[in-house]
Image (cartoon, rainbow, N blue to C red; front, side, top):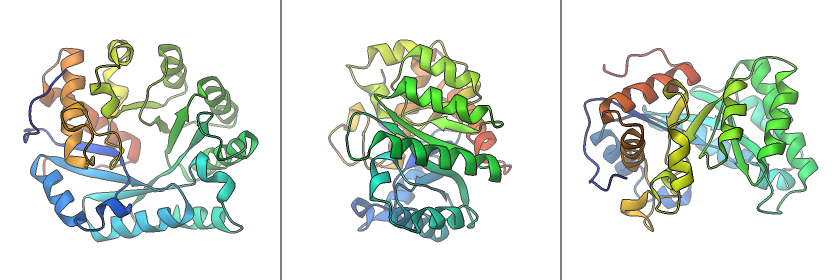
Length: 272
């Protein structure tokens, strides 16, 4: 596990999952993004969890060139969704710089939303993804079998494009998601001392399907654990992943950036 300070790399990185719309960044959002750029974070995706936060994510993406947005209703907020909120997500999906839908998925850890409501919204996101050819972002907590089952239901309708965000599941679940065409993304938990099983798992996964993220302002990696997470810290998680795979950190950065470009439909050369 790396504990070295965040330093600039010759290869750019993408933070594929953050929540830059949140109040935690209101006082210094521009400075946070400047720090990310200073350590080679090329692009960032800020993720909606409700209709309102999705609107804000689109606004933040419009304010900063490096930021892109995902829009959706996260499973723990599904029961709170008001009439018209889903139509807001459908409309925002076509907004400039929106590159994904979500986060969506299933969660049995919390009981904020009935499970049938979560499934309904999960399938709405998956169907919209297929209709618009936009990738989706999956939140899964203590619901691995059910999540795979719902993904398989959607796969029977057509091709899936998506990512398992902040993955902490089993190798069987990872393989099932890979078989369905999904990417696997790792956040700061990969750096935690308690995460040996997760660190062992990454060696079994194909490099061309891996992504890195912060989930900022949450889940700060081990060297800064307990602090507010921010996109610059994705370099720490990426370096840990590279070390676990036994490859140079720049190679890991180049590959995960290429993976993010493929998932989100970016064609611009990150070196320019």
